[in-house]
Length: 227
Image (cartoon, rainbow, N blue to C red; front, top):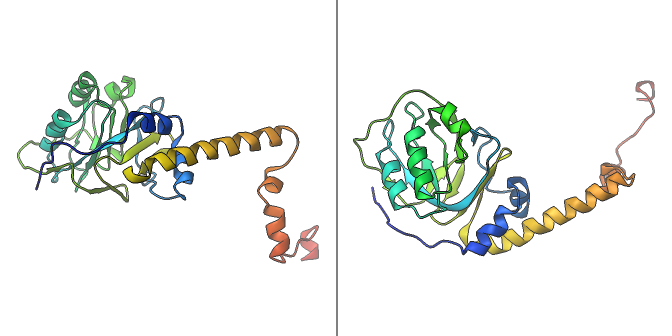
């Protein structure tokens, strides 16, 4: 168990550039890697999250370290909470009020949250794998700002978390600038595809699906009787 008070973060311009992209574009820019399990999603689907990860590891049924991390995190940081059990909620209304007052960027957890009526009405981004009314105790230490695994993805302090209603993508800190640029290229490419589709071309042609079928010598017939 260890608590690290601070860590290196990408600069604000890089965070803003990633915030201009959606989680899917960032995922593609990363070579379709570092997407969290699809069960982790937003309580309020109208909000998105983008910011440096402040990581937390908690023992089963205890969220004391989440409260500590909320005090250590800087404005804009996203708490990424790794749990060993979904039995007790690691996040709720009071933590949300506290986090909003401190200017935090959001929370992402593979555990569960509660007070979802309040969370759904709040503009504070909360992403979780489950919901439960069961409360957590505050008795056992864990760790803050150490490498964790959440939703099948390794997350280190300072990695950038990009989440929306499609899911959560994690950007390694050292590739954040390049990923932001690549995600912008993905968006430009998709804008071009939209224009060409509206102009009458089909997506299968644009993506080369027909050429792939031809190159693979797939037999194409007119009806089941020709098989």
